[in-house]
Amino acid sequence: MHFPLLAELIVKKSGFSGNLGMILGSGLSSISNVLTNKIEISYQDLHGFPVSTVAGHDGKMVAGNLDDIPVIIASGRFHYYEGYSYQEVVSIVKVFYELGIQKIIITNSSGALNRSFKPGELIVINGHLDCTYRNGYKDPKLWKGSPHYNDGLINKARESAKECSIKLNEGVYCWTQGPSYETPAEVQDLIRLGGDAVGMSTVPEVIESSELRMDVLVLSCMTNMAAGLIDKPLDHNEVVRVANKSSKNMIKLIYKLIKRI
Picture 1: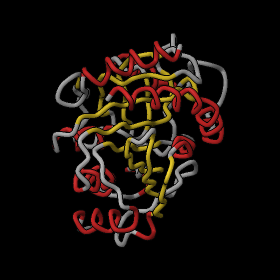
Picture 2 (picture 1 turned 60 degrees about the vertical axis):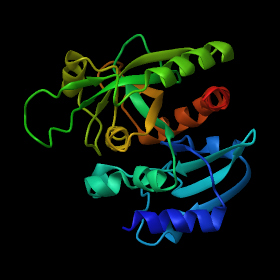
Picture 3 (picture 1 turned 90 degrees about the vertical axis):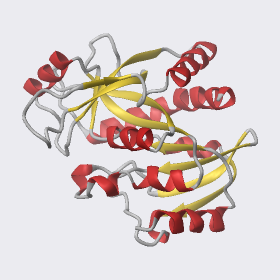
Picture 4 (picture 1 turned 120 degrees about the vertical axis):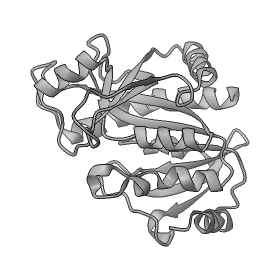
């Protein structure tokens, strides 16, 4: 993929000129509906760009304005388990960089490991663990704060949530490879490592953004309790349903947050 050419094509089709980008996760595509003067570009129309294959991921770029603030949204992301390479998984971040994006808001749907969190609540991520074990069997390192997580943006998220009267949890996100959900035994191990939420995305995007010196804020929707924490089987349709329901609070939070940043 030639990312400068892809960025040039997006600008040609949409006229986008701004420094704020967003990546939306499962069931959270309705956030793009609040944009005005929006232009949509299917990933399929971006030659050589990956295509989203997972339910709840629209697979399109949406450029528009939020209260006269230009924003570009990647509605749908790519996962390692879809068969894409690591470099393909971070394609959105690479295109955003070529577009001149300086700040990225990343959203996802995740399972709660922390028993004090409840499905439907939001969490701002302040650290991560790469629990894919792609590079060996040793316990993963906990990464918190700079350079991956911007304290200034996290503080603004806290302030925005308080102003909106939205409960905003805070914690560490565990990235697992998927596509199957974790077993109850694996969930207990993630809790042992210090995880508060678990999902199959986001961490590669955070790492790539940090390497490209873009500021990142990660907001996650707790769509379910992780396996074994409640007596109920996990189901992706339920994940999307809860994410859709919770997207109203996510939209409120992001709407207020964008004005602050």
